[in-house]
Every structure is written in C-alpha cells, then in structure tokens.
Length: 358
Image 1 (cartoon, one colour):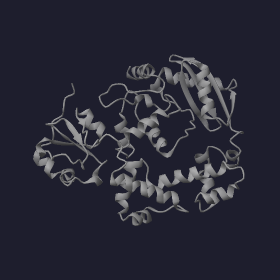
Image 2: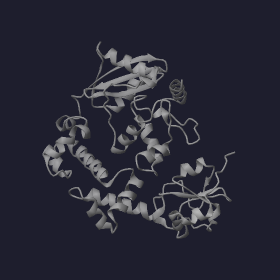
Image 3: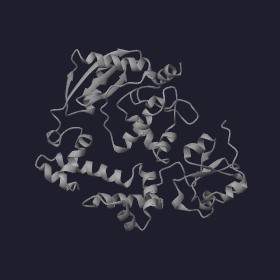
Image 4: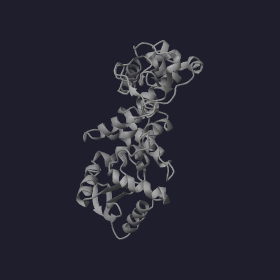
C-alpha cells in the first residue's frame, strides 16, 4: 500500500498562488501543477469541477507522476493524468503551432504573442510546457521538415526548396544543413545513396552488440540476442544508406564500446553521430548528464529540460534512443525507484545499473 504524504499546513496552502488557481478553477493553470486531497486520496487539475477541498487537506505537486509517487490516484472526473487536448491552453498552443506552420517566414515571439493576445513570457512558458519546445525551436523543426519534404521531390530545385521552407538566405540554411539532414542537400535529394555506414556485430557480456559508424561518428549501438535482427534494425534505421562491414581498424571502436558496456562508469570519448528531433536531442543530452551510479525518473528529466509536463514525451525519447549505454537511458527508473521499461530488455538494464553501483 502506498503511503500518502502529509499536505501543507492550511496557512501555507492559502498563501500559495496555486491555491487561488484551484479556488477559481483556472483552466489556464492546467498542466502547470496538480493538487491532491488527503481525505480522498485523489489528485486533480486546477480546473477540476469537483467540490472544493479544505485547504488543510490539500497539497500541490508539479506533475501527475509526483502526485502518484506520493500515493495519490488520478481523479476520474477531470482525468489529470490524461492528455488535455480540449483544455484552453492546449487549444491555444495548437493555434500557435498552426500560425508557425502557415507563416511564409519565421515569426518572432513578440509577433506570435500579439497574434494570440498574450504576453511573450506567458506564451513562451505555456508553449514549452505543452510541446516540450520553445516556439523558435518548433519553427526550426517545422522548417527542417518542409525542407526534407521538398527535397524528396526529384523535380524540386534545391534553392527553391530552401526558400520555400522559409529560410531567408541559402547561407543560413547551409550553416545548419548537416545537423538538419545529416548530409548535404544534394545527397539527401538523391535519397542518401552515398552515405556509407560501417558496422560490425560482436559479443559482449549482455549478448550481441552491433556498432555502426557514419563519417560523423558512432550512429548506433544496438543490443540483443540475435545478430541478424540487429542488422535488420540498422537497415530499417538507414534505409537509403550503403551499409558495409567495418574494416580491421573498426575492431578498436567495437572493443571500446564493449569495454563501456562491461564498465559503464568509464564513460566514452568516442565521437557520436546523434540524430533526432530537437526534443529528443534535449532529452538525450540530459541523460548523458546523469552521473554513473545515479538514476532519474522521466518526470525529473522533464523538469531538467524545462518541460515539467512532458514526462510521457521523455519516455518516448528514451525508447527511441539508438545509442545504448553511450546515451544512458538505462539510468531512468520509476518514481519509486523500481525499474521501468528498457528497449533492450529490463534484465540488461538491471545488469548495467548493478555494474555502476559496484
């Protein structure tokens, strides 16, 4: 049975700004925090229409995960742990997303805020809380998507694709082309057939390990039981690339990766080719900052990247991690400290954590 943590004292609760949001059933506060009621064992959104609780029985929590870790269960009436697609705040953010996507060129935060009648700081905060990105980062990701779609059309001129995506100059685009596409625009337009990825499959203490490397660095470290399945996984990740077996000099890279798996506390100085969305990149960077021997929860990582309500998105980013151990998603555990899922198997996760603890 979960133990429920004692709430704040009444005088502290009533002085807390969040209590006023609860009293007013302020929907704009949804997603910023939840409140829990000791006498019912339930936690709710600020806008929950349920009968108002007494302040001496109320405590505040930054996220549903935090409330559940304290022993509370979600309210069935306001469903605080469910995606709130119909709340005014979410609808507002969706509107801003559409404005960004339909603009011929990137819009500044001030102009976006003026279009929806909000202050820039409030818009910035709410947009990041809902999407996990700032409006500027979202606009960049949308530009990158538009460029990729345009370059997929063999009849599209590269310059037209660049300007059609909203880049004001070709120079600005080429400054970011490598990170955006992982290759030159010309190579991308041809489907990436000239991208060579070397790989090798070896055996480590956790089973089979596949190490793959692009010209930019190691782009995949995959764990499993079946080498053929790992090779198919790599091909699915890079369908247009030319995959080839690593030469003799590649054995050193594989050996260093196996050494990292055997002792994750060593860390690695191997160059990494980390490809992902802007949000995934932020999550993966936060994972790399967790010290060996330490752990964190999805909610804690969401807090560290400045998106406290994006714990589920953090979980999806961990599941998409292509670089086992080098990006240590094995250091993510549940709020209660128990092991959560791991794309390469919970037993491998347990083994890695035990090695770091010793």
